[in-house]
Structures are given as C-alpha cells and as structure tokens.
Amino acid sequence: MKSNCYCVIMAGGIGTRFWPKSRQSCPKQFLDILGTGRSFLRHTFDRFANIVPIENFIVVTNRRYFDLVKEHIPELKDSQILCEPIGRNTAPCIAYAAYSLLRDNPDAEMIVTPSDHLILNEKEFRRVVESSLEFVASRNALMTIGIQPTRPETGYGYIQKSNSEEVCKVKCFTEKPSLEMAEAFIECGEFLWNSGIFIWKVRDIVAAFEEHLPEHASLFGSIVDKLGTDDEKAAIEGVFSACRPISVDYGIMERAENVYVHCGDFGWSDVGTWGSVYQQSRKDRYANALSGDYTNVYNTRNSLISIPKEKVAVVSGLKDYIVVDTPDVLLICPKSEEHSIKSFIEDVKYETGDKYI
Image (cartoon, rainbow, N blue to C red; front, side, top):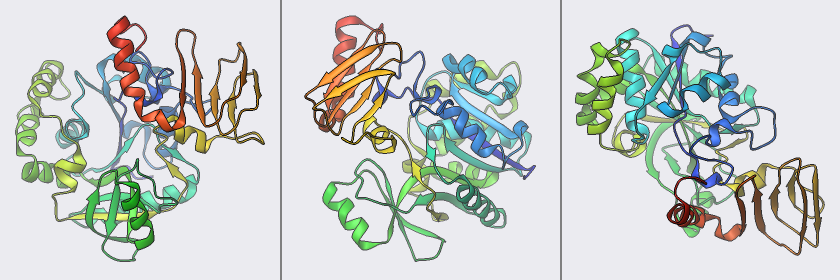
C-alpha cells in the first residue's frame, strides 16, 4: 500500500440511463443494481482500499449527495468529500481534487476513477493499477487504462495504441464510433476500450491543465489557499459558476503529448445502461434476466425484468424487452429503444415536474 498515493472517486452523476431506479435523489452510484449487496460506490471504495490508505481517498460529488456518500462510505471524514455546487463534467471535477491535493501534498500520485464500474478480476486489476503507478512515478506521464475489447461496442470510447506493448503511447482517442467503425477497430487489433480510469502525479496533471485548459487552471489556481478552509464553499461556488463544462478526455487527454495507455483485461464493464446490466446478469433458460421474488414469465425471451421483491408480477409474450418497476414508475420498452430513455424522462418531466425524475 502506497502512502503517497491518493484515490479520487468521481461520484456526482445523475445516472439518467438507469431511470426509473436511478433518480436525482438517489442516483446509480448509490444503488445495488446488480444485486450484490453493495452499491457501485461501495464496490469502488473496497476495490481500491487494498491499494490506497483510507485517509487518502477523496470523493468528488454533488453537494446534494454528501449524506449519501457518508452513508455508503462511513470510513471517510467530512474533509475527504469534495462537494460540487453544480455538475461541470469531468475536467472541473478532476481539477477540484488535483488543486486540493496540490495544496496538501504536491508530490502525491493520483488515481482517478468513476464510481460505477464493474470489475470481475480484482487481482489482475490491482496488478494493472500498481504497474501504472510504478510507470508514472518516474515519468512525466498521463496514464489511462485501456480494456481489451471483446465485441464491437458502440457505447464506449476507444483508444488507439502505438504498439503491442502492455504500456505504450496513445495514438488517438475516438468517442462512441458507429458499428461499422467499431467492427473495423476490433479487426485492426490496435484499439482498446477507454475505461475512464486515470493515473498520474498531481504536478503533472496540474501542468496539463495549465497548458491545455488554462482558464480552468487560472480559476482553480486562484483559490488554492482557500481550499480546506472555511472559505472553500464560497470559493468553489464562484469557480464552478464561471467554469466551462468539458471532459478531461477532450480537454486534456486528446491534446497532450505525454499520454500513455496501460492495456488491461480484467472483466471490466462500465455498466452504463440497462442493456449492460442484462449482459452481466444471470439468465434463465430463455435468456431472461429476472429480479424479484415473485416474477413469473411466460413466452418471454431475451428480456430484463426488474420487479420489487415484495410484488407479484406476471409477464407474458415479450421478446427483447426491458421492464423496470418501482413503487411509483413503470418502464416498459424494447431493448432496441433504450437510447430513448432520456427523451422519455424529458416528457415525464414536462408533464409532472421533477417528482418522478
């Protein structure tokens, strides 16, 4: 365990693609969607607790979720939870954590991870993370972890590697390609899925902000002395209101020259959609992924059906469908139309306000 290494968990998203289970009041990262007995956030914390000391964890979240973070990771002190007043994508989120560490420990190494991924082979995952930390420790390098793809997935970003070595420079990034392009990536053999997990030294990512996102560097650099003090909340309010929303991938990783990728193959999924939950779930002999103690299906195939445990459900005649029932919202849609969930939410919001969102 490395005492100078910090783990930053990004946990501020709303998780609209998991509506109606994921709501503004309790989004995806705080749910046990896979039925493991632990939330995504708790899984993420436990995964890194063998690599990073508990006192070196930082969770960046929306301020409305402060109490939920404390509930799911009670080991954290209040000071280890950084609260964003509004969401501004991953670059401002990472800058908030990086400039906080710059003030407290400018020589620190920094792992940045989403809060809602699935890792099946945690032993191999730990090896890849520790190998990445060793690589960046002696270099000016911005590291991302790339996943060996298993299918032409159109919902993930891709990384083109420069050679066949386990750690190598990145040629380019491609966001969510068409099916034809994804198939070409798989056939080519030079492309990895972008996991969204980053590893670097604090000084190196701050230098990258200064070079590639100077407006963000200026905003966060101007309040470094207020971070960790009673003036932090007001200072962060001002910075985030003035901060341009942008992802760290687009703002820094696609522009910097010192970007490397560590290839990994450890059973990774970002579990970003109901479709991906279906892929990861145990299925019956008709390829249905079922939850609920009293869910009865007839002439139904290749469907995900999520029913509250205490409810009796009878489902007949569905093929390739998603059915998600909650106490106040029922979603029924073909798996092929899952991309429309955001528009469904907008219609519900227009008709009823935020009550069911």
